[in-house]
Length: 97
Image 1 (spheres, helix red, strand yellow):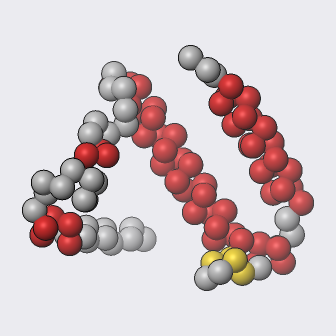
Image 2 (cartoon, one colour):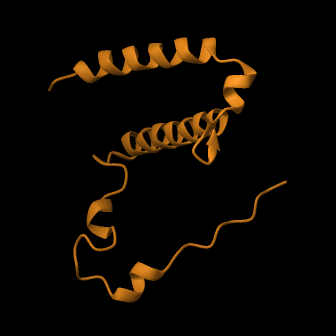
């Protein structure tokens, strides 16, 4: 198995760290579309941590993929889900605090 991704990830992480070290408060407030740079970085950090924890749980459980069959459960990929299942959206949980 090609494990070159480890070196590529490390290089990407180093580039990101170098960028973060240079950003000023003004840079972080700069808009990128509808979001600020800070919001974009927070979004990236959230999903990075989410994915990391999901993989930790996956390895600990002995599964080979984080959520078995996630691709075939995605709306429209299999084509046999009832139409109403495509329209259902989860209700957000209230924020603690």
